[in-house]
Length: 307
Image 1 (cartoon, rainbow, N blue to C red):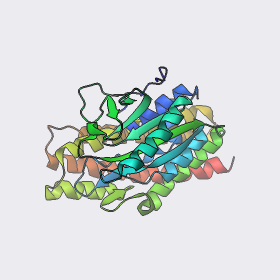
Image 2 (tube, rainbow, N blue to C red):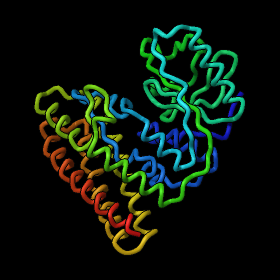
Image 3 (cartoon, one colour):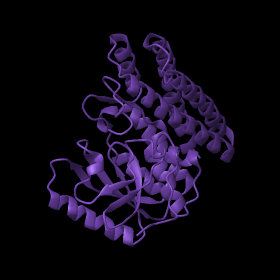
């Protein structure tokens, strides 16, 4: 059984690669900027105390799922599974997942990374590989019951996406920017232990480099993902600036420039050849620009909500 017309976009932010693929599968016409911005993912930053590469994956998704409803997607979480979960529990979930696939509903999994589940055969599920077969963390198949392809690293979730009526653009914009503001003002409600979300994440990142505890691969991957997110935030505000007039347009264009700058700085931080000491001033600059962006979002919301 295969869903042949679903494809995962080759984004660094693999979760958004899944979302892009699901939106396209259901024929929901949203730009990349609107997908990243409208879902709130464009404004997320999450850093572990040693800059573990898990930063883009280990955060509380509830607000993100709510915003996806505005884009026209309802997400059902089939549960979290670690290696000690009983075999019958795995098989029960697999039965449910196959039923959704038989009904041609989009499904995905996240273990070490996010992948669309596009079908199954007699042995197991069929998974997209967004970065090709050379990437070990995105296996092409998942054997029923054993999940052998995950090895000992099993901390998986399984998601089902159904199409619903999307919200209007004004609701998408307003709700997503309220979420962005809340990420900055109330970061602890979105973060797990040892992780920091929001502008304070830069302090954690800087401290790890100062102390020499920053994980080299984690630094590269976090900077790569969060740079992409900020580049998409810039696209989001460019789109908003072109759609509206007056103060909303002007502040939107200012935010687009700010987020392009942030994306560029984080791209420099991702350089694997650059010593950690040279990344510290870049991260300090990025933090200052993020603070400025948060203030501008507050101004934008005030102007937008007066309309």
